[in-house]
Amino acid sequence: MSTLHGQPLAVIDSGGANIGSVLFALKRLGIETDLTSDPEVIQTAQRVLLPGVGAADQAMRRLNDQALVPLIRSLKQPVLGICVGMQLLFDGSDESATNEPVDCLGVIPGRVTRLIPGEGVRVPHMGWNRLIDLDARSPLLTGIQSDSHCFFVHSYAAPVSQHSIASCQHGQPFSAMVSHGNFHGAQFHPERSAVIGHRLLENFMAMTA
Amino acid sequence: MTVDSNPLAQTSLARRIIPCLDVRDGQVVKGVKFRNHRVVGEILDLARYYRDQGADELVLYDISASPENRRVDTGWVHSVAEVIDIPFCVAGGIRDVAAARRILNAGADKISVNTPAILEPTLVAELSEAFGQQCVVVGVDSVWMDEDWWVCSFTGNEKTITRTEWRTLDWLAHVESQGAGEIVLNCIDSDGVREGYDVAQLKAARQVTSLPLVASGGAGEQAHFTEVFVEADVDAALAASVFHSGYLIIDELKQTLEESQIRVRR
Image 1: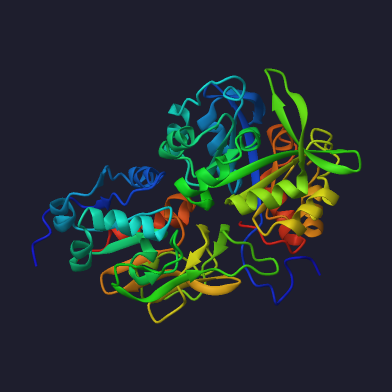
Image 2: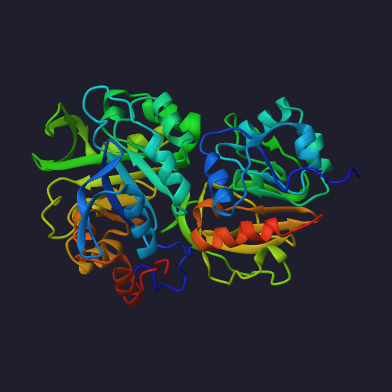
């Protein structure tokens, strides 16, 4: 393993509009950084953040085009995927323009499927919802209480599994946060989740390889 | 039992309270009563003020951009995105994918289209494909005429209401099929009157769309918010003057809603 002598954080440019707000949230934490797709920067960073909006198939295509897929899979430092970035960590997703399931990074077991609308359950799941079933052992959740509200905007979700460190309920229970080895994910948007999001990013920045 | 006290409720999603600020050339117009004086202009202070009061989201309506072909200046969008840690939506003057991209790249979480969605039939689908359904809000101005609700568009410099050929309920189903991610239904007949949201219309809208639905137009009292959440099952309620005047404070409003068993974020 190469030593992580690089910058404190690399934010992968996964494409899509409005991933800039993640950079603003980091700036509020005092971390100035840019989006990058430079393998050397990503490889040597002390932590890696994978944001993402839009569809899983588009995001995977972009990572493939940049030849970043094997690199991301091989990372040993803490990696945090946000929203679609979290979904990309799983084996696959049903979200694609062609309705063909898309292969994702496969660093966390499981598949991402569409949320099912129902009585009082609107899809997209849009707004502030509560975190439940928190795994108190996770350093990502330090200082974050059960029933804290976070801001979600998504139509696809990963099921609750042994890798869930927080869940949420919207028609069905789903993974709000996951951890598996050095790979972590948040389905909600920490950059738009007020103090809870701030704390999560702070906790992530305190993690080390 | 209210909508949110059902023990079998399938979601724990909170109902949202959304103040709407009118922005012209990067300044808030109309003004907001803020610490006992009326502030016009300081968009960042006002955005922070509402954030601290417990607003769940902000809508920033760029009124300078609507008439003619003025481009939305994105400098102020960037500034808001830097300081605000709750989501915000920019409305007004977005006519094409390029304009929407500039605003989203500046840091807005969503963009809202109204009249251009009617004038340009493929716009909603194009926006949804380019940025994802979750970014695309369709604002609808609706008026009661000839025994039905009709979509209106505003044209020209003055707010000239033009009734379109779309019945409101048909239009809602249509934009949902085109890839809209949320609907803001502004009920013209109740707007500005402060006698409550148009519950009948919002209830009818709730029946035809499974998208998140935001009530707009008519809020005057705390009870109007309780009523619209309970009766029309809307996901969010938007208001402007009742917050800007200082008559209602969002945190107090949410306390009242919570006492009425309505799920809110506090």
